[in-house]
Image (tube, rainbow, N blue to C red):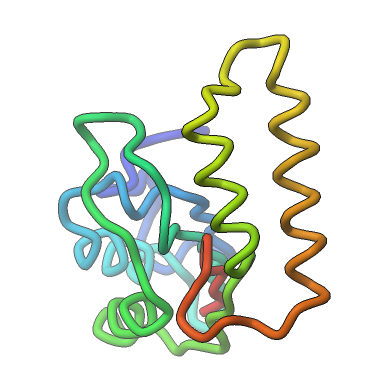
Length: 143
């Protein structure tokens, strides 16, 4: 089933889990989205959310925001959700790799597999380095 994230088609306190991946930056009112998710979750339910901190423009003209871990925590708490954690996914190397991929125009079908290999390589390299404070490609949060 699918529906409008700003008006989730389920009753209040109906869902055990909401998975929201790379959507928050595409809604003009992310605080309203968080409140709607909080409304639909059962007490003790979980929201698993991913949102970009750094990313090139995409899905234009509906690309409105980027989020730090503090911004995501603030929106969740303001909506009445308890934050278990917000952590970065992909550090400075993944971010640089992503920028290279975006600007190298690897969108052509024949080059997409190279895009995936390059992206995973940069993510793997990041795991072996201390995280550069404040740099993340994306954040993953659990509420």
